[in-house]
Image 1 (tube, rainbow, N blue to C red):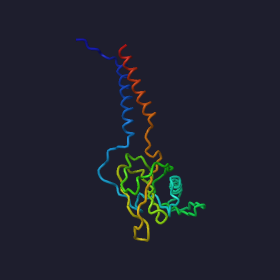
Image 2: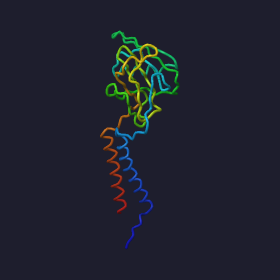
Image 3: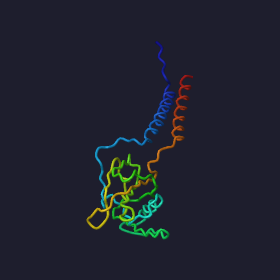
Image 4: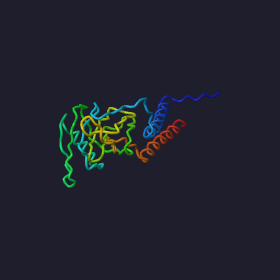
Length: 210
């Protein structure tokens, strides 16, 4: 029986090619929306230690407006406040910053809006930085949490704001912000990675057969 021994330099090339293939497939898998969930749920509450700040009343509330509110909040000193005014719409929004210190904060980048007033949110593997929750349109307010140090499933209150000691207004929707916002590589990127890996394997095979 003849045993073929692969020279060490060829073995190194083969190992590199196999690693490239594994990296491409693992990158594609990790980009999917389905992630293993850790046990338990982190419950966020209004005014807790994850609170970045509040907006009163957060109108108008389009995607671009929500991004402006959060970035205005990020720029404030701890405990500070500012106004975001939309004169044409007649809205003067008070933006306040909590006293919770999260260190340097990245700019908020819009990721996506949640499916209606759902209160359970999967953050995945820590892909997001901020969570914006709107309570009852023009009557309530907005709670913004810093979630850059959280992952997995979280839950937010169904009601909030109103007179002191009450939670009067129902959750009307929420938005997650990046940076990056958990975006996955587009199809072209995935195909390029896979093509490069298969090409590396082909080169390695021809080299080993020579």
